[in-house]
Figure 1 (cartoon, helix red, strand yellow):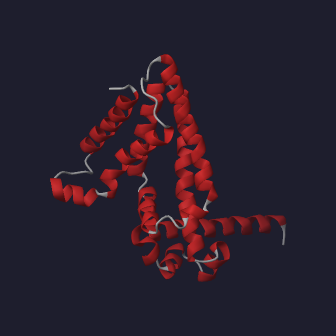
Figure 2: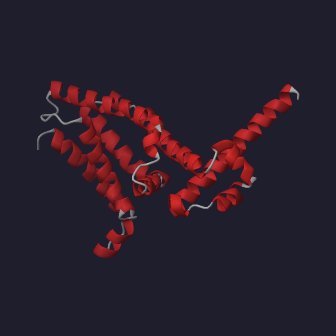
Figure 3: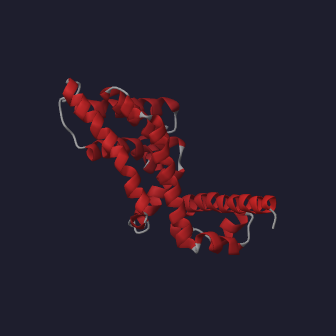
Length: 213
């Protein structure tokens, strides 16, 4: 095989592998792990079923790859934000706004999280990169808190994990409970006005606690 032909083959393989992953993400998001169907993934990816087992071994391997992808995309987007380079208050506000908007604009992440929690986390526990890639995030939050305490901008020390869990909770409840909240309280949780108001409330809540209010 010529060098050009080999390169074309690798490009084709990478393209097929990515098509399968994207089709699987949509399938798992729409039907969950238990309800996902390999035949539908094959049809959506326009590939042979043997390719799924060649690249991902089985349904479990494909599901793990999807989990790893959505986590990697979130962590990479957080890194690009460089929120830790801002002042303490602005850095925390920047991370909170980003997380709120990311969860809404990238529905694959919250849907995969809901699915995996239904699985009691049995797949994500085996993906070492999920845990290791989260450590820099907490370290950056900790640095902001330390700086804020040194300058007097913050009055209360709070654990970095606790801060991020609060941010996640405020960024997630209107997504995970979208339909029941709208039915119960009769409002449009998808409206730009609501989302903007909730985003800024999330920022205020996180900063108020750090400032000792």
